[in-house]
Amino acid sequence: MKEFIISEKEEGMTLIRYSTKMLPDAGQGMIRKFLRNKNIELNGRKSNGSDRLKSGDRISFFLSEETFDKFHGSSKAITCTKPLEKARIIYEDSDYLIYDKDAGLLSQSDISGEISVNDMLLSYAGKTGTFTPSICNRLDRNTSGIILCGLSAKGLAALDEAIRDRRIKKYYLCICEGIFEKEGKARFFLKKDETTNTALISDIPKQGFDPVETDFRIIKTGGGFSLLEAELITGKPHQIRATLSHMGHPIVGDIKYKAKKGPAKRQLLHAHRVIFPEDILDGSEFTADCPEDMQSFIK
Picture 1 (cartoon, one colour):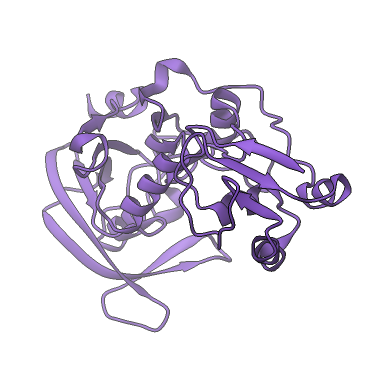
Picture 2 (cartoon, one colour; picture 1 turned 180 degrees about the horizontal axis):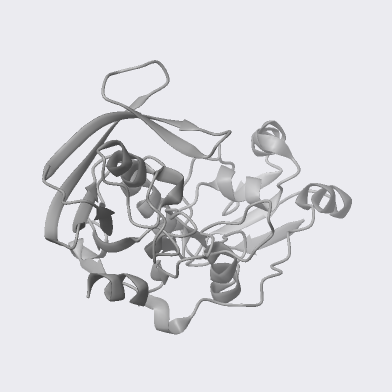
């Protein structure tokens, strides 16, 4: 028999989720069987697994050492030794962390094996029991700016739910080609082409295309360029980049979306502002300053 005490970081998980993380090689069916047969108990009693865990709860696994070890498996070691840069942490408490990602850095690991913000987060915050900190939104490699991270099960669930329900307002700064005049909401239809890793835009509904909406505000224009603030109403991959290209105003440096080659070595797109709903951080607003390459271009 093995017993574990729930930490503050794990608070908010359901028992079945906790058990699945503790016994990742068992599968949901086996976990449910263990719960039915009282091989897994919560505070000395039977549970169907739906109970929300609280700090101090006691989880008991009435399994042989061999069975527990077989289903527990081996947790993936954190190989990244480079933590988050403290100077880029915009906000941190026990549940949330807001980070200013540099351009050129992956948000999450891919097949390249390069270091990502998520790897750096794990190196910085570490794993607590069954809980693993994680980023909650992705930015393209060459897009800079705000990444939201969950440092506890409660914080991660709150961010994931708010993002899914579109209750977190996300604003981007971008510099596009041409003098932009169509301020306001732009409504199109988007489909991601996985083979080319680009987004296709249509003016009319088509099979496989999802409706997307972006609200554009003009900050300044000059020299044949426009500085815009874009609010994501929906949140599809490459939405701002593909939308502006479709409108004839590709983001400076965004060669993938038909921008001219120029002094910018990446798409000049920066996630610069978020506003939370009242139930997360009391509806606070956070900003990340434009990186030097964008500031220089604007000047």
